[in-house]
Length: 119
Image (cartoon, rainbow, N blue to C red; front, side, top):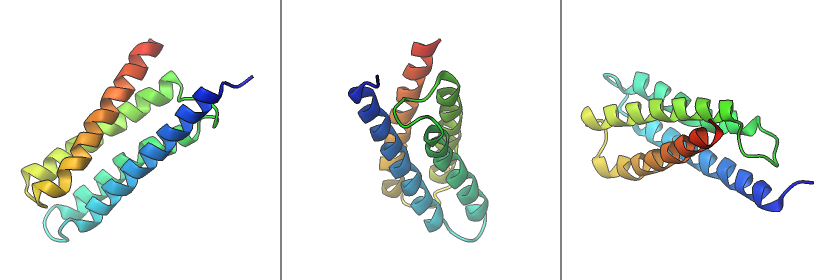
């Protein structure tokens, strides 16, 4: 028998990761088309959307497995690196990145806790 709370938690995580990926793609699309912008945009979009794709492979009623959580954590850390590079290179205004950076840190903490719980 499936636990309703677990199903709700899994759905909320999927939705949160989808919003995160969408926000990162919007930021990537706003990067300058000269210099490093296009390369960073591709890498950021790939890393930021990967967690939603990984979690979507889990059954709808379950939170991600330990392996899926580890993969999400790896991708989120990579997305954080690209976001930090966007800031360091001043490719966009800091205000445009701040909320996404906060959410990245929150998601990393969430998946670190999940990985630690599994192992």
